[in-house]
Length: 293
Image: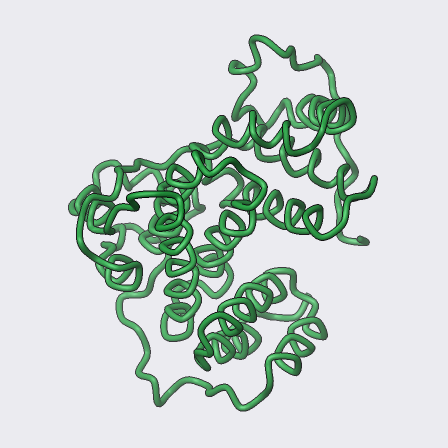
C-alpha cells in the first residue's frame, strides 16, 4: 500500500456513448476510473464485465498486460466473495485497462501445435532494448510472427478454449524456469496474463471464451518474443523444487516483490493442476533473480 501512487483525478467524464475516442489514452486515466466506479456501483458487476470484456480484451497488452492481470485478480476475488472493496477494485482494474488499452498484432490459431510447442516456436524480436512499447512495435514486421501465432491448434468450443488456456498457463510458467534470465520481471507476464484470463472465464458467457483464448495466446507470445533470451539455460544449472507449495509461496511473500508473488500464485495453481515440480522451481528462480523491493 505504501508504494501505491495517489489516485489521479478525472477532468472530463467518459460518456456511455462515444467512449471509444478515450480508449487507450493514459491522460484519461482519472476519467476512466470514475467511469467504472459508477458502472460497478449502478449495475451487477457480471453485467459490466460481460459488456466490457470483449471491448477491452483486444487491447490485452495494456500496461504490459497489467490491465488484464489486475482485472483477473479482482474477478477471482469477487467469485469467492462479493463486497464493496472487491467491487471497487474491479472498477479500478477495468479503468486502468481502458486507459492503457493496447493491441498486439494477432492471428487466430489454426495449426496443430499444443501450447508448449507453439510457445517454443515464437521468434524473438531483433532489438531487445528499450521499453515494452518499442519491443512490441517490432512484432508487425517480425518474420515468422503470423505463422507462430497460427501454429496453436484452434479451440472448437468453449471447453477446448478453457483447456488450451490452462495448457498455455502451464507452458509459460514452466518455460520461465530456463528462460528467466532474459528478463526476470517481464517474462513473468507471459504466464500471469493467461492465468488472469483463465480465472475470469467462469464470470463470462461461454461465447466469449474462444476469443479470450486468442487474446491470451497473443499476449503470452508477444511477451515471449520481446524478452526471451537467445538460449535457455540447461536444466542442471537451475534450481529444483525441494520445498512444498506452501513453503514456496511463503518465500515469495517474504520476498515482497509483487511480480514474484504473482508468479508464485500462478505457479501454485499450475502445480495443483499438473503436479509439475518445475512450476515451483520457477518461483525459486524468480526469487534468485529479482531484487527485493
